Length: 88
Length: 393
Image (cartoon, rainbow over all chains, first blue to last red; front, top):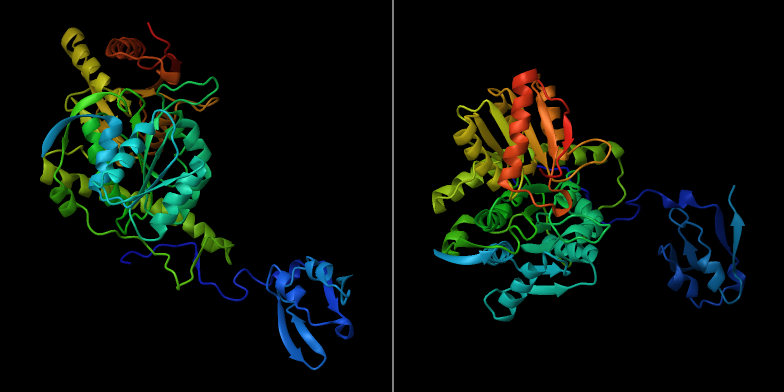
């Protein structure tokens, strides 16, 4: 490109739109003892903020920097292992 | 080269074909429809190596055209009137993304009531989108500008989309002899496609994400404005190059007809500039009025410098507008008046709102209105009313 223009471009990367977790007003909390490792929450999370980690008793881990608190994970959890609690 | 009888719409189609457009996406609307019908025919017969995408709306037509262009090929669409309004949001996205695309607009008035005849309400409503906007006077200019517009918009100094406007029916469906240049000539004129970036599979890129800095976002708008200013030079250069190849040049952003000794100017855009030429010839011969025609070819970028140059030696200017911003005035008048006043050129200027909604305007109508304008200025040194509706004699 011979002329430099100011372009509305970005490369996809984690957090390219900022820490969207700050938008959250309710947060998902996980009771790992009730988790049956079905991964439905991981499948349904629209922001891909749930990872399968299998660390100690935790099968999943939520990235609170980007979780917007939509509550879909709590809704799909068949054992009610995830519940939404108010922030702050 | 071969001279053939072509409608304005077929001239557009030939221009797109000769520019080796690879993707056409369109939705039919009168009076544009025969442009894309002809292109579909070229593609079907194998005379044109391109894909035709039939979409469900004009919004999608430009979205698909933009998508193809962002993918790295020359892409084209055409529309009119309500279709252009439906597309309006995507005009902002295409220009803001800085992706060169060429679109033909067969100018047609807006409803209600339903009306298919020409005025410039649709095209003038796109002035602020960041698209280059030009209006042609005749079918040869339509064909030549479709080709030129690809070269202008793909110049790295510009990298903005562009509209070639042609008046509904007066050009779109009227047959004139048009010289169709040889493919080899157009190939030598148009370089390979250039654009600021290309979307490629396996190389993810985001266009239009929420900005991390609003200042950076504002600079994007400044850059579009700056590139419009740069486009003026590119338009001149491309037009001069086309003239060397074909013998046909159009003066760049403006042409001034019989202006060397003119005391008055009449300004306009589009097909009725031809009628203005006749009116001026008539007024000079019958009444000895020294008047010239200022043909404004590009509405965006606006030819501020040219207007100042042509206006510097005249007593007064009449502007014919075929659209109006209700509550203000005609858009061409507003631009001309603003730039003249801002540069300190104070002279009487009159807006003649005529031919809206397709009302026929003949050269006699134009001559009649101009004669009254000239007498006002001669008698009073100014105009009675700066904004006047002309409904006919």
